[in-house]
Amino acid sequence: MAGKVSAKADVYSYGILLLMVFTGRKPTDEQFDGDSSLRQWVGEAFPFAISDVIDSHLLNENNTTPTERSTAMNELLGRIMEIGLSCSRVSPNERMDMKEVVVGLRRVRQMTRTIEG
Image (cartoon, rainbow, N blue to C red; front, side, top):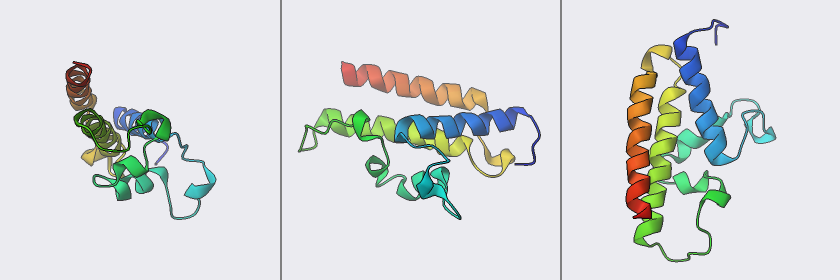
């Protein structure tokens, strides 16, 4: 935000990238003008309505009743979005460091392996 290059700025960018990839939205989309932002939009949905902001192509739309697999997938996507939100906090001191991000993403990978069974 101050225009300085730092590891915390890279973490912020990585968090925004995660939010972009998993929502299918860009911070420059028309809906994010004025006081609204991609991060704010995801943050308002987190954790209870996270499936409302996830790119529909990532969700299993053919499944009308929640199954154990779709519930696990929603949890997995929620964890990824949580990492994105943690990385993109306004205050650099409150952001995760990349070691924490790696640990979180490894947990997500383990969850994925469990889901794929």
